[in-house]
Length: 325
Image 1: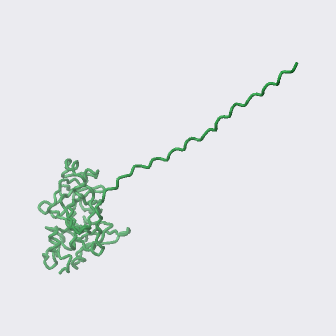
Image 2 (image 1 turned 135 degrees about the vertical axis):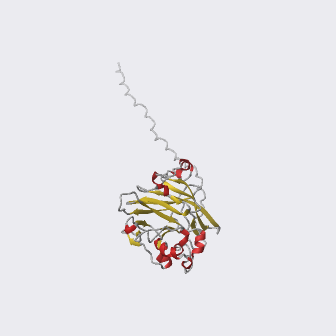
Image 3 (image 1 turned 45 degrees about the horizontal axis):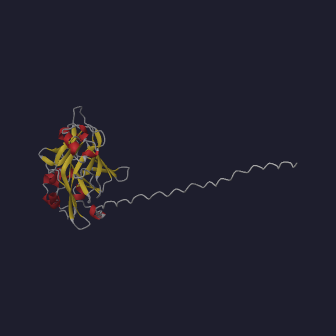
Protein backbone atom coordinates (compact mmCIF):
# COMPACT_ATOMS: atom_id res chain seq x y z
CA UNK A 1 0.00 0.00 0.00
CA UNK A 2 1.12 3.47 -0.78
CA UNK A 3 1.88 5.76 2.15
CA UNK A 4 -0.46 8.69 2.69
CA UNK A 5 0.59 11.98 1.06
CA UNK A 6 2.34 14.41 3.34
CA UNK A 7 0.08 16.94 4.93
CA UNK A 8 -0.37 20.22 3.13
CA UNK A 9 1.57 22.98 4.88
CA UNK A 10 -0.65 25.68 6.37
CA UNK A 11 -1.30 28.59 4.10
CA UNK A 12 -0.31 32.07 5.22
CA UNK A 13 -3.31 34.26 5.77
CA UNK A 14 -3.94 36.62 2.96
CA UNK A 15 -2.07 39.90 3.47
CA UNK A 16 -4.16 42.84 4.58
CA UNK A 17 -4.34 45.85 2.36
CA UNK A 18 -1.85 48.48 3.33
CA UNK A 19 -3.06 51.00 5.89
CA UNK A 20 -3.49 54.29 4.12
CA UNK A 21 -2.49 57.42 5.86
CA UNK A 22 -5.38 59.56 6.99
CA UNK A 23 -6.67 62.05 4.55
CA UNK A 24 -4.80 65.28 4.92
CA UNK A 25 -6.88 67.88 6.75
CA UNK A 26 -8.14 70.70 4.66
CA UNK A 27 -6.52 74.09 5.25
CA UNK A 28 -8.52 76.30 7.60
CA UNK A 29 -11.00 78.54 5.95
CA UNK A 30 -9.79 82.09 5.65
CA UNK A 31 -11.46 84.47 8.10
CA UNK A 32 -14.34 86.41 6.68
CA UNK A 33 -13.28 89.74 5.27
CA UNK A 34 -13.41 92.50 7.83
CA UNK A 35 -15.17 95.71 7.12
CA UNK A 36 -12.82 98.62 6.50
CA UNK A 37 -12.20 100.85 9.52
CA UNK A 38 -14.37 103.91 9.71
CA UNK A 39 -12.97 106.94 8.03
CA UNK A 40 -11.26 109.30 10.42
CA UNK A 41 -11.38 113.05 9.99
CA UNK A 42 -8.17 114.32 8.49
CA UNK A 43 -5.50 115.35 10.97
CA UNK A 44 -5.10 119.07 11.26
CA UNK A 45 -1.41 119.90 10.95
CA UNK A 46 -0.01 121.70 13.97
CA UNK A 47 1.24 125.23 13.44
CA UNK A 48 4.98 125.73 12.90
CA UNK A 49 6.98 126.37 16.05
CA UNK A 50 7.64 130.03 15.34
CA UNK A 51 3.89 130.62 15.32
CA UNK A 52 3.36 128.59 18.48
CA UNK A 53 5.87 130.79 20.29
CA UNK A 54 3.29 133.58 20.03
CA UNK A 55 0.17 132.10 21.66
CA UNK A 56 -3.10 133.80 20.76
CA UNK A 57 -1.60 135.53 17.70
CA UNK A 58 -2.98 135.09 14.21
CA UNK A 59 -6.29 133.81 12.88
CA UNK A 60 -5.96 130.53 14.78
CA UNK A 61 -5.95 130.88 18.55
CA UNK A 62 -7.07 129.53 21.90
CA UNK A 63 -9.10 131.80 24.16
CA UNK A 64 -10.49 131.19 27.65
CA UNK A 65 -13.06 133.28 29.47
CA UNK A 66 -13.21 132.51 33.19
CA UNK A 67 -15.81 135.22 33.73
CA UNK A 68 -18.22 133.55 31.30
CA UNK A 69 -17.58 130.01 32.56
CA UNK A 70 -19.75 128.08 35.01
CA UNK A 71 -18.58 125.85 37.86
CA UNK A 72 -21.12 123.03 38.26
CA UNK A 73 -18.72 120.96 40.39
CA UNK A 74 -16.24 122.38 42.93
CA UNK A 75 -14.62 119.69 45.06
CA UNK A 76 -10.82 120.01 44.97
CA UNK A 77 -9.29 117.43 47.30
CA UNK A 78 -12.77 116.12 48.05
CA UNK A 79 -13.29 119.09 50.38
CA UNK A 80 -16.13 120.95 48.67
CA UNK A 81 -17.71 123.42 48.73
CA UNK A 82 -19.92 121.87 46.02
CA UNK A 83 -19.59 118.14 45.48
CA UNK A 84 -22.24 117.80 42.76
CA UNK A 85 -23.04 114.09 42.71
CA UNK A 86 -25.59 114.51 39.91
CA UNK A 87 -23.05 116.24 37.68
CA UNK A 88 -20.40 113.60 38.38
CA UNK A 89 -22.82 110.81 37.46
CA UNK A 90 -24.01 112.36 34.19
CA UNK A 91 -21.17 114.44 32.73
CA UNK A 92 -19.37 112.46 29.96
CA UNK A 93 -15.91 113.38 31.21
CA UNK A 94 -16.62 112.65 34.86
CA UNK A 95 -18.07 109.27 33.84
CA UNK A 96 -14.69 108.22 32.40
CA UNK A 97 -13.52 107.36 35.92
CA UNK A 98 -11.56 110.53 36.60
CA UNK A 99 -11.25 111.44 40.26
CA UNK A 100 -14.20 113.60 41.31
CA UNK A 101 -11.87 115.64 43.53
CA UNK A 102 -11.53 118.66 41.30
CA UNK A 103 -13.01 121.89 39.94
CA UNK A 104 -14.88 121.81 36.63
CA UNK A 105 -14.98 125.03 34.55
CA UNK A 106 -17.77 124.60 32.01
CA UNK A 107 -17.98 126.67 28.82
CA UNK A 108 -14.53 128.10 29.37
CA UNK A 109 -12.63 128.06 26.09
CA UNK A 110 -12.69 128.03 22.30
CA UNK A 111 -9.97 126.69 20.02
CA UNK A 112 -10.21 128.33 16.58
CA UNK A 113 -8.36 126.63 13.73
CA UNK A 114 -8.49 126.07 9.99
CA UNK A 115 -9.17 122.45 9.02
CA UNK A 116 -7.88 120.58 5.96
CA UNK A 117 -10.71 121.85 3.78
CA UNK A 118 -9.92 125.45 4.66
CA UNK A 119 -12.95 125.77 6.91
CA UNK A 120 -12.65 127.87 10.04
CA UNK A 121 -13.60 125.68 13.01
CA UNK A 122 -14.39 126.86 16.54
CA UNK A 123 -14.16 124.00 19.01
CA UNK A 124 -15.41 124.70 22.54
CA UNK A 125 -13.69 123.05 25.49
CA UNK A 126 -13.98 122.89 29.27
CA UNK A 127 -11.30 122.76 31.96
CA UNK A 128 -10.98 120.34 34.87
CA UNK A 129 -8.50 121.10 37.65
CA UNK A 130 -7.69 118.30 40.07
CA UNK A 131 -5.08 117.63 42.71
CA UNK A 132 -2.59 114.86 41.93
CA UNK A 133 -1.14 114.79 45.45
CA UNK A 134 -2.43 115.50 48.96
CA UNK A 135 -4.06 118.92 49.05
CA UNK A 136 -4.75 120.90 52.24
CA UNK A 137 -6.58 124.24 51.94
CA UNK A 138 -7.14 126.87 54.56
CA UNK A 139 -10.58 127.75 53.20
CA UNK A 140 -11.92 125.61 50.33
CA UNK A 141 -14.92 127.95 50.08
CA UNK A 142 -12.60 130.30 48.17
CA UNK A 143 -11.84 127.74 45.45
CA UNK A 144 -13.26 128.17 41.96
CA UNK A 145 -13.78 131.84 41.12
CA UNK A 146 -13.69 134.92 43.30
CA UNK A 147 -17.15 136.28 43.97
CA UNK A 148 -17.66 139.44 41.92
CA UNK A 149 -14.24 139.06 40.27
CA UNK A 150 -14.84 136.00 38.20
CA UNK A 151 -12.10 136.41 35.60
CA UNK A 152 -9.70 134.49 37.87
CA UNK A 153 -9.62 130.83 38.70
CA UNK A 154 -8.66 130.38 42.36
CA UNK A 155 -7.00 127.61 44.36
CA UNK A 156 -6.75 128.21 48.08
CA UNK A 157 -3.90 126.55 50.02
CA UNK A 158 -2.91 126.31 53.66
CA UNK A 159 0.49 127.52 54.80
CA UNK A 160 3.47 125.15 54.57
CA UNK A 161 1.96 123.09 51.74
CA UNK A 162 3.35 121.74 48.47
CA UNK A 163 1.04 119.88 46.10
CA UNK A 164 0.56 119.04 42.42
CA UNK A 165 -2.41 120.24 40.39
CA UNK A 166 -3.31 118.87 36.96
CA UNK A 167 -5.12 121.06 34.43
CA UNK A 168 -7.09 119.00 31.88
CA UNK A 169 -8.77 120.35 28.74
CA UNK A 170 -12.04 118.54 28.02
CA UNK A 171 -14.12 118.11 24.88
CA UNK A 172 -17.61 118.50 26.36
CA UNK A 173 -19.54 116.48 23.77
CA UNK A 174 -17.48 113.30 24.06
CA UNK A 175 -15.86 113.63 27.48
CA UNK A 176 -12.44 113.02 25.92
CA UNK A 177 -9.38 115.04 26.77
CA UNK A 178 -9.07 117.79 24.22
CA UNK A 179 -5.78 118.46 22.43
CA UNK A 180 -6.01 121.98 21.00
CA UNK A 181 -4.75 122.66 17.50
CA UNK A 182 -2.93 125.80 18.70
CA UNK A 183 -0.49 126.67 21.44
CA UNK A 184 -1.96 128.41 24.47
CA UNK A 185 -0.94 130.24 27.64
CA UNK A 186 -2.06 130.14 31.28
CA UNK A 187 -1.36 133.14 33.49
CA UNK A 188 -0.73 133.28 37.24
CA UNK A 189 -1.15 136.64 38.97
CA UNK A 190 -0.46 138.09 42.42
CA UNK A 191 2.62 135.92 43.00
CA UNK A 192 3.96 137.27 46.28
CA UNK A 193 4.90 136.52 49.88
CA UNK A 194 3.52 137.50 53.25
CA UNK A 195 5.08 140.19 55.38
CA UNK A 196 8.84 139.71 55.85
CA UNK A 197 8.97 136.96 53.22
CA UNK A 198 6.87 134.32 54.98
CA UNK A 199 4.10 132.43 53.17
CA UNK A 200 6.13 132.58 49.98
CA UNK A 201 4.28 131.42 46.85
CA UNK A 202 6.24 129.34 44.35
CA UNK A 203 5.67 127.13 41.32
CA UNK A 204 7.43 124.26 39.59
CA UNK A 205 6.64 123.39 35.97
CA UNK A 206 7.99 121.09 33.26
CA UNK A 207 7.33 120.53 29.56
CA UNK A 208 6.42 124.13 28.86
CA UNK A 209 6.90 125.87 25.54
CA UNK A 210 8.11 128.93 27.39
CA UNK A 211 7.35 131.48 30.09
CA UNK A 212 6.88 135.23 30.04
CA UNK A 213 7.16 137.73 32.86
CA UNK A 214 6.67 141.49 32.76
CA UNK A 215 10.28 141.73 31.60
CA UNK A 216 9.76 139.66 28.43
CA UNK A 217 6.38 141.23 27.67
CA UNK A 218 6.90 144.89 28.50
CA UNK A 219 10.53 145.31 29.51
CA UNK A 220 9.28 146.05 33.04
CA UNK A 221 11.38 144.54 35.84
CA UNK A 222 9.78 141.40 37.29
CA UNK A 223 9.70 140.61 41.00
CA UNK A 224 9.93 136.87 40.33
CA UNK A 225 12.99 134.68 40.75
CA UNK A 226 13.25 131.91 38.14
CA UNK A 227 15.74 129.06 38.17
CA UNK A 228 16.32 125.95 36.09
CA UNK A 229 15.66 122.65 37.82
CA UNK A 230 17.90 119.59 37.28
CA UNK A 231 15.33 117.90 35.02
CA UNK A 232 15.50 119.19 31.45
CA UNK A 233 12.84 121.75 30.63
CA UNK A 234 11.76 122.23 34.25
CA UNK A 235 11.70 125.52 36.15
CA UNK A 236 11.05 126.85 39.63
CA UNK A 237 9.47 130.27 40.07
CA UNK A 238 9.53 132.04 43.45
CA UNK A 239 7.94 135.22 44.74
CA UNK A 240 10.30 137.81 46.21
CA UNK A 241 7.94 140.75 46.96
CA UNK A 242 5.56 140.82 49.92
CA UNK A 243 1.86 141.46 49.57
CA UNK A 244 2.20 145.05 50.77
CA UNK A 245 4.02 145.77 47.51
CA UNK A 246 1.87 143.37 45.47
CA UNK A 247 -1.81 143.97 46.29
CA UNK A 248 -4.42 141.70 44.78
CA UNK A 249 -5.37 142.71 41.22
CA UNK A 250 -8.94 143.80 40.72
CA UNK A 251 -9.25 142.21 37.29
CA UNK A 252 -7.02 139.94 35.24
CA UNK A 253 -7.79 141.97 32.14
CA UNK A 254 -6.10 145.01 33.72
CA UNK A 255 -2.72 143.75 32.52
CA UNK A 256 -3.91 142.66 29.06
CA UNK A 257 -3.51 146.13 27.55
CA UNK A 258 -0.74 148.05 25.85
CA UNK A 259 1.78 149.37 28.32
CA UNK A 260 1.00 152.96 27.42
CA UNK A 261 -2.69 152.34 28.21
CA UNK A 262 -2.04 150.51 31.47
CA UNK A 263 -3.05 152.12 34.75
CA UNK A 264 0.11 153.30 36.56
CA UNK A 265 -0.92 151.46 39.72
CA UNK A 266 -1.31 148.21 37.78
CA UNK A 267 1.99 148.74 36.00
CA UNK A 268 3.84 149.23 39.29
CA UNK A 269 1.99 146.93 41.69
CA UNK A 270 0.38 144.15 39.64
CA UNK A 271 2.31 143.57 36.42
CA UNK A 272 5.69 142.70 38.05
CA UNK A 273 4.06 139.83 39.95
CA UNK A 274 2.44 138.13 36.92
CA UNK A 275 3.69 135.18 34.88
CA UNK A 276 2.48 133.13 31.94
CA UNK A 277 3.31 129.55 30.96
CA UNK A 278 2.74 128.58 27.33
CA UNK A 279 2.19 125.05 26.03
CA UNK A 280 2.59 123.43 22.63
CA UNK A 281 -0.36 122.71 20.38
CA UNK A 282 -1.67 119.23 21.10
CA UNK A 283 -1.18 119.54 24.87
CA UNK A 284 -4.35 118.22 26.51
CA UNK A 285 -3.15 118.42 30.12
CA UNK A 286 -0.30 119.76 32.20
CA UNK A 287 0.78 119.76 35.83
CA UNK A 288 1.89 122.62 38.05
CA UNK A 289 3.38 122.17 41.51
CA UNK A 290 2.11 124.86 43.88
CA UNK A 291 3.80 125.68 47.16
CA UNK A 292 3.10 128.00 50.08
CA UNK A 293 5.86 128.58 52.61
CA UNK A 294 5.49 128.33 56.35
CA UNK A 295 4.03 131.13 58.46
CA UNK A 296 5.46 132.51 61.68
CA UNK A 297 2.26 131.94 63.55
CA UNK A 298 0.37 128.90 64.74
CA UNK A 299 -2.89 130.52 63.66
CA UNK A 300 -4.47 129.09 60.50
CA UNK A 301 -3.40 131.09 57.50
CA UNK A 302 -2.98 130.49 53.78
CA UNK A 303 -2.80 131.96 50.29
CA UNK A 304 -4.81 132.04 47.09
CA UNK A 305 -3.28 131.11 43.74
CA UNK A 306 -4.91 133.15 40.97
CA UNK A 307 -4.84 131.86 37.38
CA UNK A 308 -6.46 133.07 34.20
CA UNK A 309 -6.10 133.30 30.42
CA UNK A 310 -6.82 135.80 27.68
CA UNK A 311 -10.26 136.34 26.18
CA UNK A 312 -10.72 137.43 22.59
CA UNK A 313 -11.28 141.00 23.79
CA UNK A 314 -8.06 140.83 25.81
CA UNK A 315 -6.09 139.74 22.75
CA UNK A 316 -7.47 142.54 20.62
CA UNK A 317 -6.61 145.28 23.12
CA UNK A 318 -3.35 143.87 24.48
CA UNK A 319 -1.08 144.49 21.51
CA UNK A 320 0.86 141.35 22.45
CA UNK A 321 0.88 140.30 18.82
CA UNK A 322 2.21 143.66 17.66
CA UNK A 323 4.92 145.98 18.84
CA UNK A 324 3.97 146.80 22.40
CA UNK A 325 4.24 150.48 23.28
